[in-house]
Structures are given as structure tokens and as C-alpha cells.
Image (cartoon, rainbow, N blue to C red; front, side, top):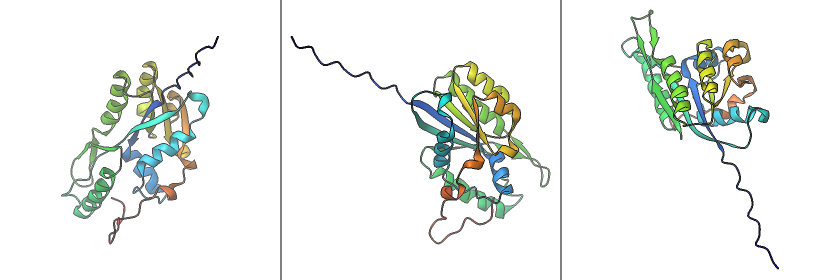
Length: 205
């Protein structure tokens, strides 16, 4: 008597991954190293995810979204810088599965304060965790203010990993996350984007 073939066990679904970038924090760190901000941010997220030790999660992951959060310069303060920002903005918006979310700057020239960026980063991570929009998240930041956000994300049953340069990391944020990933190991030159034909990126915005 023959028996019907046994169906293979379905493979587990890939973990849904999002990456949230504190753009102001990352830009300052890249500027200090003479590295360009005109890079492939989706590929950066993938490279970071590959550096996460497998012991911290099971199965596979699939990158769903990359969210870059920053505040644009004020046009009236420095028109040239604002034009450089417009090129950066256009570069970001052309990238697949990369979203740009903007806070704002307030104050007069030389006394500018950033508003809303930290809140937008926190909202992305917290709302996504409680709405079951992701399984694991990467936060690119060296800002210790996000340590409490990381703790709440973990309490919601999600994985969260902190990525930044080792010398500028926040020990509180790194400790609050499931693991810390060093950006020092990333090949930044491979991520660099060429400017549009006939154009240049100019200096950093």
C-alpha cells in the first residue's frame, strides 16, 4: 500500500526589517570622516543587516523600508547651502524603498535649533512596533535619548539593533538594543553614488 508523499514543512516567513536613520547625527559623523552623504541608503541598510550576528535572530530578513529623518537648512540663511540640500533631497527621493521625513530648523542665523527630528525617529519605531509593521528594526544614531525608545520596542516583542561608529556610539542606546553594529566595518566607497550626468554634488549641504 502506497502512502501519499509527505509535504515539506513550509519555510518560515522572512522577518520584516525597517531601518530608521537619524540623518543629522549620521551626517555629522560622516562629515568628520570626510565621507559623502550621497550614498545608496538602501544598500547601507542591507550591509548593516548582514553584520548583525545570526545568534540574535532566527530565519531570514527582508528589508521593507528605510526612513531617513533630518531637518533641511533654512533657505534665507544660506541660499547656496539650501541649493546643495535640494540636490541631496532629490538624490534621496530617487532611491527605491527610501523615505525622507523632515523636521525643521528654527531661529536666526547662527542660533538655529532643530525641531521634530527626534520625535519623527521615535514615532517610526514605536508606531511600527505597536502596529505590527515590522519584526526587527535598525536605528542609525549615536544619540542616547533613543535608549528608552529601544527598550519600549523590545518590550513590544520586536528586535532592535543600533548601528553607528564605535567611537561615537551611545553606550546607553547600544546597551538598550539587542545588539550594536559598528559602521566602521562598512565599505563606504562602494556605497557612494555618482552625481547626475554633467553635474556635481558640490560641497556637503
